[in-house]
Length: 378
Ligand SMILES: *Cc1c(COP(=O)(O)O)cnc(C)c1O
Image 1 (cartoon, rainbow, N blue to C red):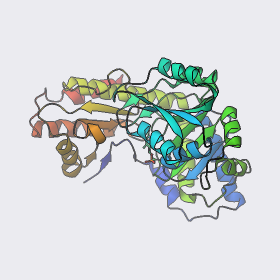
Image 2: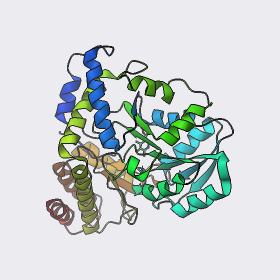
Image 3: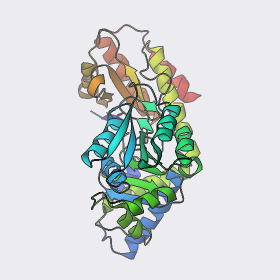
Image 4: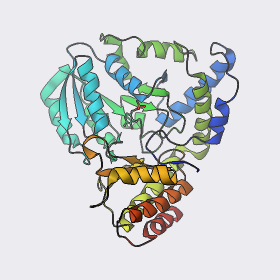
């Protein structure tokens, strides 16, 4: 059975990247590796749309999120945390772990935060408020946050805007320097199309100033050490050499496609998915603030959501994601990020229709697949 991966991370890996990881390993303190790192760094800046250094860590995305707390803040600092899903909650858990007092802005799951609400809190709090932690694509709910609007607000405050773009980078519009985003965190196994194991972060000048003053305890995720190294095409510790080789290959692919084409492809594919979902008579979980990286769909009445996901995966080889926490059994999620191709999506909807029918859901046969194909062809 061939397995199809339509989950919002890990995502399928292009053959160029897989092949590069099978090559003999090279030592990292060599001119050969430095050359690779330089190329990777230049292309990461292109994808992040920044001229600031992009730091590379051997960890999953959460490692860089942790660093974005410990490397920026000091005891006594205060933060705002936008919590509209599992990953927004993670920012709060990280702040709590390091004793950072934060103001939670709880957003109903499936909705996106109102920038005005953040503005009001920033104005009321003054200078002790050092950072606003948000999620660009809240993967657990399939919601996109209006980062451009938030950046306009934080720009005229003392606080830095810290964006979890782990699932959004390379899938959703994100103009780091142009919009004035201070900190962008990402990971390797979503839109960047390589296996899990690398995390990334970029910092604006304003964020580097905060990092210079930061006194929270830190060691492995000390951003200053990584900055010093990357400026010399080096890393402070042993990097994940083979993953960086794979990264080099996918970044070449992204450069060849061009960032605008890449974003447009995600826009088109995700719209086709939403059309297909509606054609099946299903409801989107986030009809207004939907994401181009992952689409969350309500499990219809009378269908067992867990069984839907499990049957698609175990009987037909198509992995989609279920709901997490409070959404367990209530939604399912189909990713459109990275190397998930049109053919993968077609296969996904064929199997979704078969399994929905098996589970007793009534709909017009082939309506989803046809709507998807129309959307993909447009
Ligand atoms: C996947 C994801 C994470 C977690 O990343 P790990 O690589 O699992 O540590 C964090 N935030 C968002 C929005 C994600 O999609």
